[in-house]
Structures are given as C-alpha cells and as structure tokens.
Image (cartoon, rainbow over all chains, first blue to last red; front, side):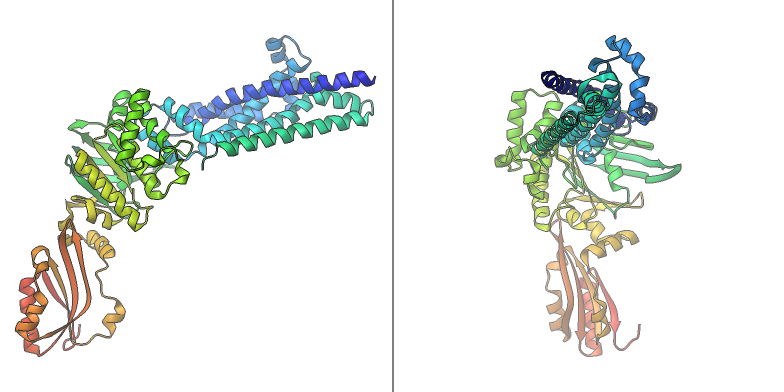
Length: 217
Length: 340
C-alpha cells in the first residue's frame, strides 16, 4: 500500500505537470495569436477591422463565460475526436487548452495594448512593414507584461487541472479526491496540497524573475 | 517640396463630426526650416501627420516633391515614410532595445543587410554625438540624449524631410537649445527640409525661416518669421506673440506712473542707433526706462521700450516727434496732463 501510494503520487505529479505544460503551450501560442488579432484589429495603426475584432471577441467571451466544470463535460465529444479517448490526462488536455487559450487571449490583448502607442507610431512612421513591427517592436515591448500574464495563466491552469481530476482526468487533483477525500487519507490530501503550493510558488517566482530581467524601463 | 492644397481633416467621434483641420493651404520649400505654431488643439499635429499619411486626409491634397501622396499604399507608402523622418515630444524609443538596436531597427526594416546597418548606425551615432551610448537602454539616457537617438533613427534611411512634433516641448531650456542647434546643423549639412510644430514661439524664433500660425484648425497667417513677429495684423497672432515676448508693462507699474509714458517699438536697422540719447541731447528731455526688451529673430533685432519722459511740454513734444520719425512706432500710452 505504502509503495503503491508513492508510485501513485509520482505518477499524479507527472500527469499534472504534463497537462499543465501542454495546455500552457497551446495557450501561449494560440491565445497569444488571438490576443494579437484582438489588438491589431482594434488599432488604427495596424489593421483596424471591427467585424473580425468583434467576432473573435465574442468567441472568447462565450468560452470564458462557461464554467470550467461544464466546459469539461461539454468538450467530451471534441476530446474523443482529437485524442480518441474521454478519460485520463490526454482527454482533459483538450478542455484545459480551450479554457486557457481564451483566458490568455484576453490577457495578451491587454499586454499588447499597454505598449506605448507612440513607440508603435514611430515604427509605422519609419516605413517598417506591419508584421515586422509586430515581431520586432510590439512583442519585445510587451514581453515583460506577457510573461507576467503567462504566469497568471499557468497558475490558474494548475487549478483547472485539479478540477479536471474529479471527472477522471488523472493528476494531483484526481489523487487528492480519490485517496484524500473518498478514502479519508488526510496525509495524501496534505501532500497533494503541498505539491500544488510549491508548484505555484516556483512558477510565480520564475515568472516574476524573468519579467523583471526583461523589463528595461 | 511639400504642398497642402485645401486640406480638410475631420474625425467622427461617437456620431459627431469634428473638424481638426479646415481648408489648409501651404507651401513648404525644399531645404527650409518651417514652423507651424498655434495653441494646443489647433490642429498642428494633425496637419503634420498628413505629410507621412499617419493621418489620412478627408478632402484636399498633399503633394510631396510635386506628387500627390494621399492615395499612397503598400511599398509606395513605406518608401514615402522612409523618406520622411519624424521625431516626437516623448521621443518614442523602444524601451526594450538599446540605442544601437533602436536605430538598427529602421534600417533592417528597410531591408538593409547586417553589414550596411552596422556601418550606418555607427555613422549616425557619430552624427548625433552618442557613440559611447550605443549599448545603453533608453531608460539610462537624459531627455536630450533620447531625442538625439530619435533624430538619428529618423534620419537613418537618408530622409529628405524631417517632421518634428513638439520635439523640444518636454526638454529644459538648455537641452532645447542644443537640440535646435543640432537640427539647424543637420539642415545646413544635409539640406534636409524640416517642419517643426510647436506651441513655443521661442523655438520658431531661433531656427525657423518661415512660419504658419494655426488657430482652431485654420491657418490664419503664413510668412517670414520676422515679419510675423513684427508686422502681424492678425489678432490671434498678436496675442500669441505678446504671450511669448511678454512685452507688456506690469499693472503695478502703470498704477504709480507720473509724466508721459511712451511705448517705442523699433525694428531692424534703427535698433542699432542711439535714438534715445540723441533725443535726450537735442530736445533737452530726460528718460527713465520702465521696461525694455530686445529680441533677436534670425539675428535681426526687434526692440520694445516703455519710457517715462520728463521735461518741458514743448521739449517732450519735439522729442516725441523725433522718436516717431526714427522708430517703427511711438505710442503715448499715458500722459499725466491728459486723462485716458
């Protein structure tokens, strides 16, 4: 039993790490792109386009208004389609990614809109191409803020991943519910909580450090 | 070089149309330093931004080198912008980039190779005297240094036109002077056409050759700087100038005045002649100068004196006649014997 528990714990920790890492990867790339689209289509210096801006905005808002627990269930058919299974960490990566893409898209949009407009105007006035400005000015200028928001996204993803455990998603949340709650093994519960606390602390520290290092203001 | 033909710019803000520039026509010659002045909200910035199409024109036309630019798009527009440098009140350097990288950005964006970029950045840093700051981030620089970097960036692609949007308004007097000197030097060395918008007439006075005055979207007057400062008949211009030159006698002084007080304005050549001492000697009157100021505009003096004249009534009369014929204007603003 004791050895089994140790195995179960390490497996759960690994599953949580993988779930969070994969979803965070999707959130950064796809959420970042959506955030960029939201920003660029609202700014006359880039490609102001109300229709695209509102369409993307509505999709993100709809996704964000669905409570994550419901999104988990709602996206079961999508998980089945994409990863051929409806249980385990692979299956919950789908709803986790969808939720965190929408979450990070808004935060990324805010990070981009906090970039000094004058700096962007100066770049446009220099005759640089828009895509070139986005890659070489907008993203580097927004980077410290983007990193802070990636940290926020990662922390809430850890919370979501624990919730995903309750519907058979695996990971630390699953372990805490099955052993800690249903089997009254308080020690397992505490270990799970401690693991989550340490993970969040490490992420927050690393994020703050990187953001500070990159901020040249 | 740059010509505005009946330019209108209007914005629609929550259903309401607001016209920022109204029917502006203006011609700026190649190689000149042209000033556009006016109080804030006069539409100066908007008009300036039509030259590189940061601001689209609602009606009218803008010509650069004889070609209408208002329909420019894509590569043609980017070429226009590379040929038109711009500097700003708040410098607008990228904080995430070093001085070197800020300048290199516009060169690489224009498709220059790494070798070409490196050579040009070094040249430019030398031009603005910041070679030792190449690897510093903007947050480590003073305002004047930041504006120098911005100037180097604006000129990187060999611009023929430099647009200055309140470029010295965030700087102290000394730094303003050094930036203006640099601009004048660049104008003379490179033959670059400079358009300056500012609310500070001091800037115009020290480096511009011609100036346009804007008030609520309209160009109310255009002319040589000296003429505008000395001969303007326009109420708005006169007001703007009197704010800058502070040529008015304080009320406290006026309240305690005795005798005859005249306001003497003299321009150009007669500013160099000893008019007062001559009048004192020949007419037998005494002078007490209450307020005096001589401004030099493009090295031509413009002087204003408020003088209290003492003496016999007859002597004063002849002194006034002498002054009137030897100055631009002599105006009696107070006379003890007459009430005003």
